Length: 507
Image 1 (cartoon, rainbow, N blue to C red):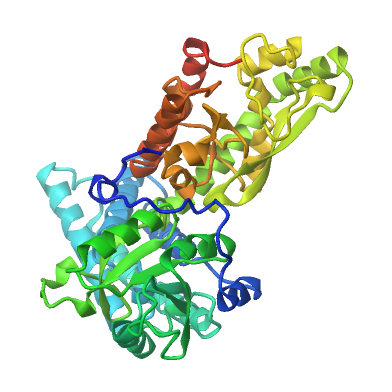
Image 2 (cartoon, one colour):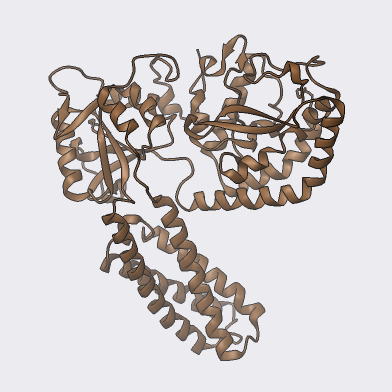
């Protein structure tokens, strides 16, 4: 089996594990019961944080401009608006640096008020000093500065107290708790569970434990929670029921066990934390993050989370709607051409793997003859393939056949940019993709996309060799590890160019 290497420190220690998608022992009865149980309606903490940041910044900006408009009638707005926006951006950055935008922080009173008020004071000091240094104080009213500072402090205090009440209400309903499993067992896991019950029960809904040990050191029940299986089965479990957080109860000295565990679990879109309660080494507080009051080491994070999730969602919807409006004439002409050339439906639907290996049905313009459609993509399309119609050949070459996937984006099943979703039975060198490339399913830690880093670098079209699929996967993992909204914008911008200049493999 070939190996991709996005996280060198982990994958250098890869141990050959059975592929999570291959047939194997079923989940335990306890695990199956959890999978079958209805999942309570929850609110994403990442979305709460993102929306809170957006609303807070908007309120501060509106207050600043409102005070200016009241005092001056809106004069010199061209100067005031960028000053206000820059100040609000700086405030948001400082609040994030002070960890004031965290669910745990929203539950406090004095702590979060102190952080945001100190941050707001720093913003005003920086703004005043900047205006003085650049001698831009004349256009800015001192009374406006004082009024915005005082009004902003009151607004922040009121907003944060209201946010605390709302988060507290959702917490009581259990809608903000993260579904969590523990990797490890025995006395160490028992200690961790006690700490969770003491300081993090509002934040964590513990489902059970996974442990590879089967001796007396790892009993079937720990503090009332069942052992649900070995670590390898956690992958299947997390794909069948939502899991937000994996807490590892292993000592730092057990390096091989920790690396073996990470090697298996890094393909999942979950946060992985190593509990520090077993470590005899003591670090400064900055070395830890916290789950409740439990000190942990951050081993892996969801690739796109918190505020970035909101950015990504807005980006997808705006680009998809804009593209549908601009490209609708091309789509209409394509639909007519397909109907005129051959009998059958205009659209072709096919199952693909989506986020976290969920099955989704993507839309395409039909490019093959109706009697030769290959819904499972058992045989890849090759050059001069007799199954492809004349219209189909053109729309495949230009990727026009992919345009209906804009509707998948609007439905939330695809992103504009991300790893391209592959057909379930697609093969390279007579091997299924996930059999040919170890770590293949790590592509699914984010939503698949209509275009991606692999496609704009020429890795599109036929994938008949293992080297080609490895190149795709490596580019996809590079994208996931280096994602930013600017990276997405860059890929979207160069996609039309790459379709023209790098289309030799598209049939």
